[in-house]
Image 1 (cartoon, rainbow, N blue to C red):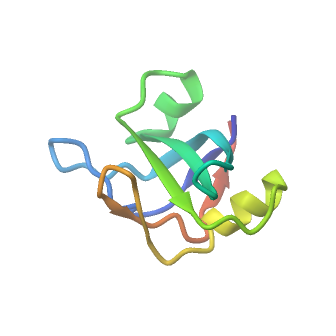
Image 2 (cartoon, rainbow, N blue to C red):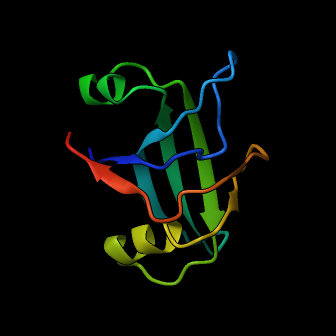
Image 3 (tube, one colour):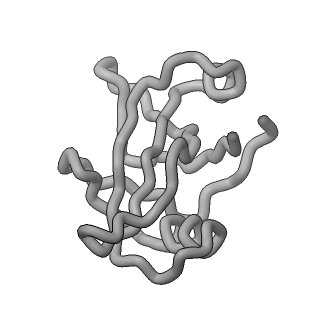
Length: 101
């Protein structure tokens, strides 16, 4: 699972610490609702993501599909200035840096 870093994704722990590391857990298209979606897990520390510890948060994003190709879907997700999750949080994953996993 690829791990990415984006300073200030918009999510925090209950203590107010940024969740700047994340991985895409599931990526796909929902043909019933005509959307692409991604389930993303967020971490405070890179070491937690690398070791597979439980995530600090998980969110689902949906957007208008532009392709069925996985790499294009990831590029689309990483191109939005901001995106609203299905739980109502607004996050940004714009141009993240891939971390060593």
